[in-house]
Image (cartoon, one colour):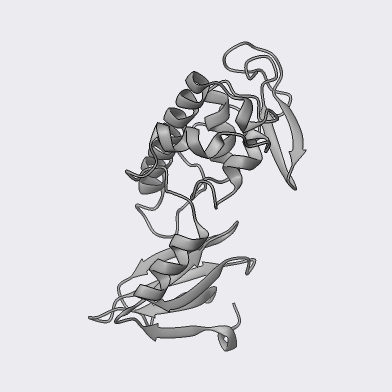
Length: 215
């Protein structure tokens, strides 16, 4: 909320790279000059409108790059996006082949698959009945195909949820309409088998899963 740290600029042939992290939000406003006190960045658009980047805990990141430079940077650092044509079941199986990484950590690695966070990985693994501790290279082709399908479905559900949640600026609530079956439900009954949902640490994050359903 310190105005001395506020940045305002107009983009033309450049693009911004934004990572919201845990507390960041982007809002469209009718007048770029009328931003909130918590704004960290204000992007002025043609016509006077603006986009505000708010981040109460200052965990998010934003960088401006030339569009060509940004495309090259992203291509080198990120794997395919699950909702893109590149993310086929065959390509996913090829990535997993021989990997000793646990399924949870493999999917959280943005160099393998881009755009999957802790919540969506937990839910995709649950829907596909995959144990988050199992090495990706040990999953059968049918199980990999099921996991590929559920990754796409989970993100489609998440996009729809975010579209609804961001419909009214200032009223966003994470996961507002996204139905979590395992994430954040430690000790509660599994919606499939009734056994208790477990939590374990993996890669510095909490993993939620059903040890009975996910094998």
